[in-house]
Amino acid sequence: MKVGTSVRGKGLSEVPDDTAQAEKLGYDFISTSETKHNPFLAAVLASEHSTKMNVRTSIALAFARSPMDTAYMAWDLQGLAGGRFHLGLGSQVRGHIVRRFNMPWGRPAARMREYILALRAIWASWQQGAKLDFRGDFYNFNLMPPFFDPGPIEYPDIKIYVAAVNERMQQVAGEVSDGVLLHSFNTPKHTREVVLPNLEKGAAKAGKTLADLDIHGGGFIVTGADDEELEARVREAKSSISFYASTRSYASVMNTHGWNDTAQKLYRMSVEGKWGQMGEHITDEMLEAFAVVGTYDNIVDRIKARHGPYASSISFSIPIMSPEDGERLREMIRRLKAD
Image (cartoon, rainbow, N blue to C red; front, side, top):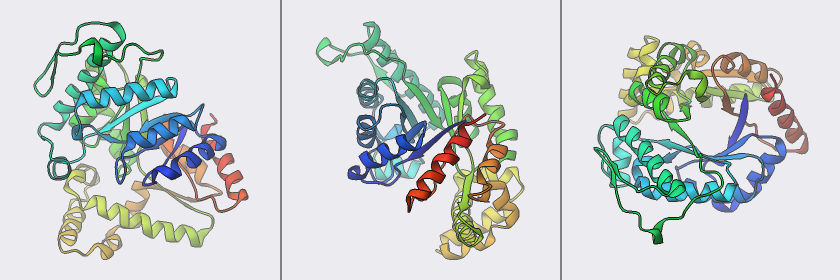
C-alpha cells in the first residue's frame, strides 16, 4: 500500500519545507488541493522540492477551467517533475462551479468523461505531432498552431485520477482514468456494494479490470497518542461526518446503511444553522462504519485491516511536535507500506 500526505490549506511559502519533510519521512506521494489556494502552483513547488515522491493534485476542479488550460499546466508539471506528476480531478457541485467560478454546469459524469478524453487528445497532438481534432458534446478543440505547441516531453504518460462519489462518476473513473480518489465520507459496506461494482462496470467498457485501477482512500482515519487525545479526535470526526451526512450530494452512502432518517434530520439542522449540535446524532455504530479509530499503538494494523482488501494507496499523517513524533510517523509509514 502506498502512503501519501498533503499540503491541504497551506500557503505557498509552507509548501517547500512540508514537501522536503514528507520525502524524508518516506512518503510515496504528496498532494495539493483546490480549497483556499490554487493546486497547480503548490504542485510546482512540491515538484521542485522533491526528487522521489509523486506529486498529485487532489483535487483540481476540472470544470473551473478549460481542458486546454489544464493540459498545459499538467504537461509543464510532468516535465518539471520528471514524470512524477499525477493529475487528480474532481467535479465539485453545481453551486461552486456556477456561483463561485461562473462556469457552465450540466451532466457532470458525461462532462468529466469528455474532459479526460479531450486532455488525452491534446497531449497526443503535442507528443506525436498529430493534428488536433477533438469534437464532443461539451468541448471542441481543432486549433494548435506550432507557435502554441509545447512539443513532446520525456514522460508523456500523465496519470489521471478522478474523485468519484456518485455511481455514474465511479463508472467514468473506471472507464477513462488511471485511478479513483474515494471520498472520506465512505464506508467498507458502501465500497463493496456500490463503489467497486461501478468501477468494475466502467473498467469493463475499456477492456480493463479493477486490478488496472489505483484505488485511493475511502473513510476517515481517527487517531491520537492516548485515549484522552483519541476521544477529542473522535468528537471532531463525528462533527465532520455529520456535516457530510447533512449534504444531499452524499445521500447514497447513508442510504446504503439505511440511515436516511438521520440524514434528513441532519439536513434540517444544517438549514437551521445548528452545526454545533449535529455531531451528537452520529452514533458509535456510524463512527465505526465511517472511520478507522485507534491510538498510535494500534492504528496501523487497523488501517491495513480496513483498507488493505481494496485500497492501493491511502493518505495518513500525525502531528509532528517533536523529533520523537517524526520518528514515530516514519515507522508508521514504513509499516503501512510493508506487505
